[in-house]
Length: 33
Image 1 (cartoon, helix red, strand yellow):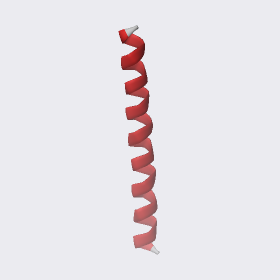
Image 2 (image 1 turned 90 degrees about the horizontal axis):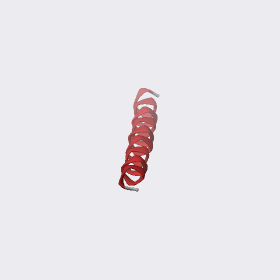
Image 3 (image 1 turned 30 degrees about the vertical axis):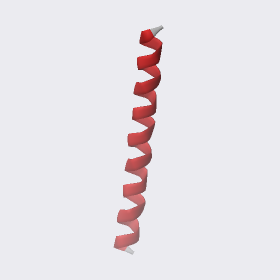
């Protein structure tokens, strides 16, 4: 049960860092244009 909980937290953290990475890529594109 607790391992599933930690797995969900890990997935959320991964998706959050992915979204942040994509956002920073977009910001870089805006600055380059």
